[in-house]
Image 1 (spheres, rainbow, N blue to C red):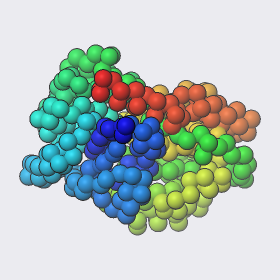
Image 2: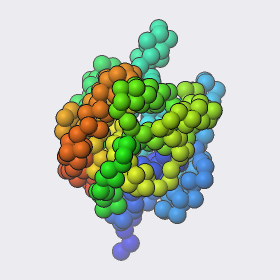
Image 3: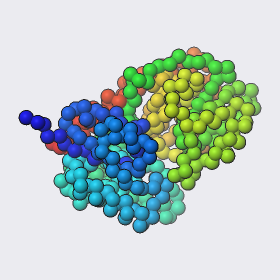
Length: 380
């Protein structure tokens, strides 16, 4: 007798983001033999990789940077059409904007169970103007309202984000699962020997945008060199045209002209990055979910210097896997880097601890097991 497979529809903003973070989850769902999958998202060159992985891809155009009333309505109309055609058993919505818009539409599709996957609260949680506070109150109250409906569960990547959302309504623990990001394949990401560069190489991997604090990292590099602590700084990542706070290529090239700083653009070989680098820095100014670049560096056995923000501080334990420093503070960041640069034994010890933490609780297997359990609960 042929098994009837349940249908999962993923909803997120970008196909390339799903490819980098959740393609392994899709593989696990398909390999379980219980599910067939589709996705609604913006499409790019990554679409073919999603289709080759067994996903049916539905283009659903939404801006990540900002969205007006008419574009929001247009997106919601697209999503509603996809829901009607696919008739999914589970709608797995990833990211705040898809939750707000796609989740609102999903209310009218009562036969579909919903998983709301919060991967960070972004700048919406940071604004201080009256307008930002008003938008935040409406948006987060709407998120809590959706989560508390029947056959709805939530995944969240750090406890700070959960407590933040609870300011806008009651959320029972039974409806929530804490995730350590999207998970790391510990068989693929194996510990690498330290290159022992002279001078040591500090690396940043991520989008070249203001919120990531790259300018603060550049200042800390110059501060350390002025103090006689020689380090090189390698920046890996591209400007993000879809983000209003992106650093332009001209600014990045100016930084590259500073002695000891190199901007390499986006790297498709992350193993090569950490094979050549001694220390990972996550200098973000704002809240994170659970930065994948941080987890990848840890899996390769690199010590970490991270900002004291949600997400980062829930993986790194100060003095164990690395150091936690004040966000948007070049002096504090420089001090954290200096501790590792001046103690090779500590650098090695913390790198091993970072790898162990990944294996203990942040592997793909951990995340897949938790997610598939959520699917079972929703269908049960």
